[in-house]
Image (tube, rainbow, N blue to C red; front, side, top):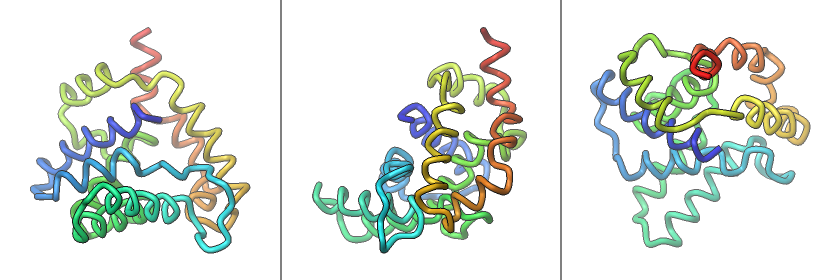
Length: 174
């Protein structure tokens, strides 16, 4: 999952250039690295989705490590929104959203320069990622069946993951 998070940072940075966005890079970096920290986490009677649980944990992390209020709030919002069906409006949230959806299902891959994709994919292995992520999503769906993640899983996330052109790159490079 760490390589997924690092790829998300790399893809988010590439999308920032393409989409002419100027995110808070520190907040975006932290959000990219921590966005799946609660995927499959224990049941929480208050939070309905791992993204919200993770957002709260990441916000606490930023505050505990002397991050300012603005950074903590951006990290929270960015992580909380990364599983939204539609791309959020806020730049950091939009960038993580699109980067995570790209890495999981290939969404927007054609927007990127193929060389950029090759560099990222060859630098940060995705070997075993699809199986690991699918396993975690199954657990997440059982623990929070009404969550956005569970809804996306039931709506066909796994076939989209299997059809991800980035996964085919891994197979063809072996």
